[in-house]
Length: 116
Length: 109
Image (tube, rainbow over all chains, first blue to last red; front, side):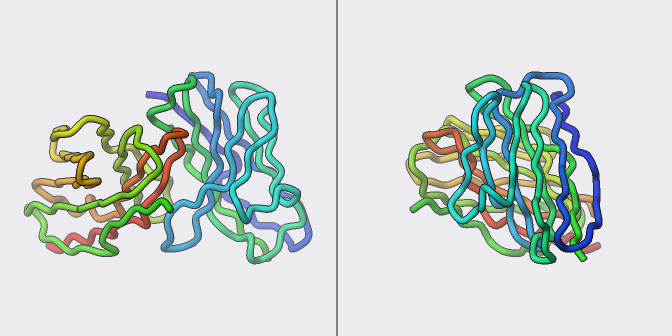
């Protein structure tokens, strides 16, 4: 099946720094990638939808200037958490859909971010 | 608004059968997914239903009734490794996934 990777798996950073998380589709071209955030014991919360070559569509309440998303190619999307704060500590998961009729999303393994 | 409801937590015995229900109200419908998520890990795909009826895949089966806005995931011959959260998600008219809060399944020996 389709494989999506994320890097890094986990990261610890100081408050005020920026962190970049990469999401790659390894064996297929992902027209659309999704970024989710999951706090402990809560369900996945969609942050933004990223389409290759265009600006990401952010969900209500998600600050686009804080969570920068770049989908420069059909196999790579990046999420940069700028000026991270402890409340940004969370599990960030990306998923990718193949083609335009993306009936199934393939999930990356997730990135655990801890901001001190 | 869009809403997915599933029980918060369920407990079952090893070797038994458990049914996890999911009801939904969404803007359009393009399929319903069940995912399994172990603590600290990303979700893994279990099943996809877009037509009414039962889809069987090994020990897991998923049922859908579009007219009732209802689905269930049936797990048979439960094993300890089945202890996880089970997430129901519906793809709306824009093909966006709307997620339920998940059902934490606890398996007891």
